[in-house]
Length: 342
Image (tube, rainbow, N blue to C red; front, side):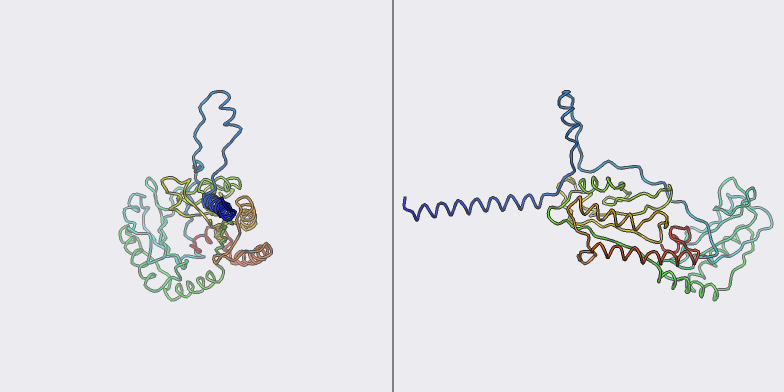
């Protein structure tokens, strides 16, 4: 065999080896990272000749937070109408007279009764008696300010309820309430804050189980929606502190271990979480820790890397926002703030 032929053979072998190596690297890069298996436990079970429990790709669902309690009407953010009655009305009669929908246009609408026994305002209940009623429509939310049409619908619904229970309704002046709604909406629009960081994989993608396992180390639990995890608040029955989400399609795949996730979103609805939960500090720390443990980058929606000093600047500006909300009696995480910024 001539030297030229041998050279070609060697070159071909090197080229083949390079192709094999490239394919192996590409396959490894595109194979989603999987959750770690408890090796020590598996070895112990093997020694004892006992069957090893299968390890599923997705972490088991943790108990979900308790349902959020619904706050009552508040003159700070609601237009209120008083409904007087001559004699106490049963809860059964009040419930039967309630309108079929609890909205006036895009605004929440509610009717409360003053409980004869406790004197407290509450949503009518069976077995109770009520000496007065009030209805309310929210002045503003993230859909905008209460308008004339929505106020008129509020009046119609309230009057129909009052007629059904033989009550007399007294309404506020529409012009005043609509003007108050616009002012409140302007304030809310200027002080709303919803933050989001995107964690992007540097190299290998992540499987849903890998994301669950890493997030669980920082206190996240599975949420009610596939592909969403939450960091529970310290108090039950209130919204979670943070959210972490990825593709719902990946979470619902027949074999999630083959689902390739290249980015997850860490989110904070600032006005919904009390200041004392230190939500942004926990969001920043979680983003940095998850990026380190999962070999990812912290970026904005456009894919630009967010440096650590930028995160600190965001935290400083939020302190001013908290102060402003406190001064308006709309503290972050309060019932009023969660209703207004919804």
